[in-house]
Amino acid sequence: MPGANQKEGTDMAINQNPGVEPEWVSLREAAKIYAISTYTLRRRIASGDLPAVKLGYKLIRVRVSDLDRLFPAVPTTRPEDRYRRW
Image (cartoon, rainbow, N blue to C red):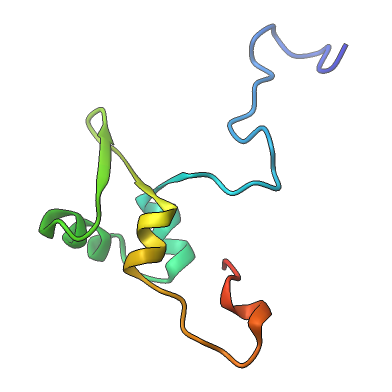
């Protein structure tokens, strides 16, 4: 029985598959990945350049694919660095 010390129903993890990147990320996570400010992301959302979903009062999520389109990778001489996440 996995997690015998845990209460029933609390052993669900947010990311069930750690090797798979999430499709949606928070503004804080996106800002950390792309080394930009959350205010920059909010301005891009307000201008319509970056589609976002607001879930509740403060919870805003953006798609990773939309972020990749808005902030394309800079070509490098080392291909392994091109898609590296911070």
